[in-house]
Length: 636
Image (tube, rainbow, N blue to C red; front, side, top):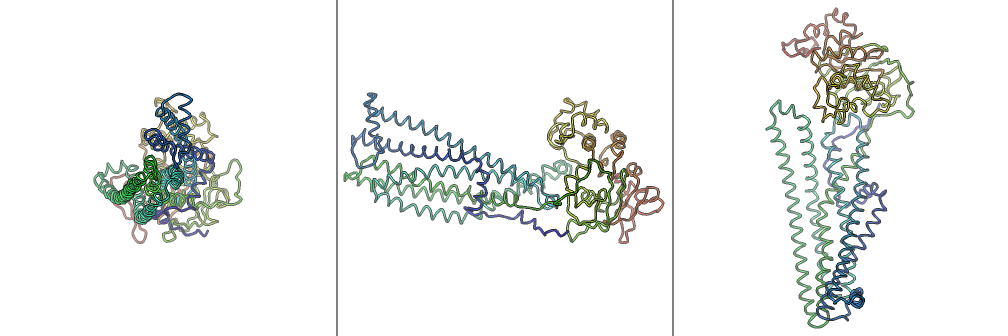
């Protein structure tokens, strides 16, 4: 099977992210489109809110200053009918002009508050639900990546994509919604300003390009910095995940100080990049603020002269100062949003890099369908395999396991024992005509069908958050509560479960830390038995169980293996002796094969491992065993 060469380093590459990648933005919006009606409603609400915001400024300047304080009701400056509305309210209610204007102002302010609230509510709900769908699709995609992918890509980097990077998209989309709310008043104010004073409006617009130029240079300077910030955050997550998941090893080896030093170095790097981004943002903010101050000075100077010459009212000058904020604020906010935008574009690239990563186990177009029950014959036929082409792990391995028989595989660490069962579970791609179940090539079977037939008990298996029952059933609708309890009884797990406060409904903490190692192993046996597979694999499943607990499960194991083809990778001599055949691997090749008695009579590697179960065994250049005294129980 010719597999494409994949550069997994590209998955972990440092992505820069363009300031506004329209193609990338369109892909992001794909998850938002199902909620476009909410976005449309949000747009209508923000239009209404923005218009009312402009009206409020007119009430302050034209109605309060010009009409009420100065008494100039007639002017060539637009008031959008607010003076007439105030006069109408005076006639209808008999209120003084100030009270009438205040009542209108209060109604407008209340309407702006209500409309703005529902604008934000509809906008954020659409974004949150769209990104929820994106996160679910990303999680579902990552679940289907093969083991070879996770062998090469750090889990911490993957977690960053699902958590931090999706959160960065939320900040960006919410920021875009806020910018829309700022640019609507910008254009309304611009129209009114031109109708009031073309010269003064043009003078103010003269400064807008400077804000745009400052924004451009800010983008150029900060693009690289924000990329480095994202990557340093990813490194922090990766380092944190590694240390927390291995906390027991850290504490046993007293590596706390060393790990803190490593984390501190990464954190300092992140802090340095964060400071650089903050300095850039602060400088940009100070520059735009200074331009706004210059604009205000121009309005006061030029507008004051217009008032003296009776060419503009005092309310008009005040209106210009209020509208100047509407003119500059969107541009300033756009610059401030560039920080979020840069991060989000880089995050979007990282997310879609993960979504577009198409590495997966080869599945046949028309998979062979097993009958409801299979015999369980297994055949490894001249298997050659390596996780990389440069380092072969299995070399011409051949062995046949008849239905219902037990094969024990022994050998030194790194000899290829676990690799054999990983291939049998279809966790990796391999060439055709090498591994068969019931004389059917595994490449002709769907991986899900294979894994339903193969039950695996590992030395360190995974406990999920949930109850004892949840961890036995694993969401399989074909396993009832009664079946799960029956399986637990068979492997002698029922006794310790019944002693728990909530019995089978007792919650388990992360990785089952509130159970002993032996109890977790018993739970693993119950999990496999409840699934009722035809093929059973025990990968050093009793290596971490004390003698008393092992005695409890031996009878359960015998029941578990009845009528099932079993592969045993074990250190315990008793388990190996009960196997029908023993396969001895060394450096990925079959060194010996036969029954326990036959291999002992051969006086070879197995005999040496058997005789020196409590000693370390290594090998010389000619594959002869070299014995080393050791008090640890390394076993076979």
